[in-house]
Length: 130
Image (cartoon, rainbow, N blue to C red):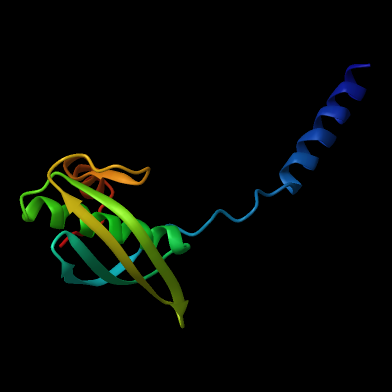
């Protein structure tokens, strides 16, 4: 009986060793290529960003949001509100075109950003700002 238990144990162990975990995702190592800022009208600001190594459009959107948050603080404002972002990829280069409003008081709307909180998160995540 004991021999059968050892054989069963060896069979299970050899079966487990044949299982290999799926290849893990490659590490996220973005290259942030730059931010271009344009004041469109008073509190309306456009940000064009470029990066390589983005996993998807959300990484480009995060980069633009970090730029907007820092820009709001530089201008003496505490908040930004996201209006739109367009992101696309060509040959490994991701580009984003985002528009935000900046304001001293919390703006109305769902996509508001506390600039101070956002810039701290950006710094913590290694995302460059303006």
